[in-house]
Amino acid sequence: MGKVGLGTIMALVILIGLLLLAIVFMAVGWNAPEGGEKMSVAGWIAMILGVIATLALGIGLMALMFYSNRSGRD
Figure 1: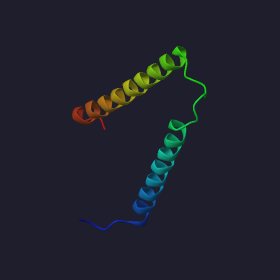
Figure 2: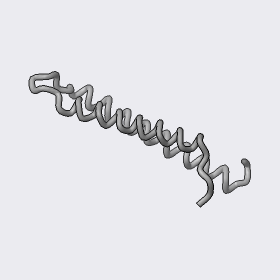
Figure 3: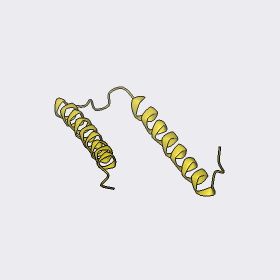
Figure 4: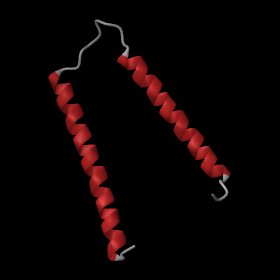
């Protein structure tokens, strides 16, 4: 294993910190007190469409990257 630079360590610390922060927000939101607002059907549809669009964009960009790499255009 090669040397790990300071930039790599800083990036990992920041990413792990953001992951922990997201987990805390998720836990707080998940354990919201009863009687809070429930998500409407429109909210569920919007969330599902957002997830599908995000996945499609990510998959499409990765496919273009692999195609570009194999065709020798980069």
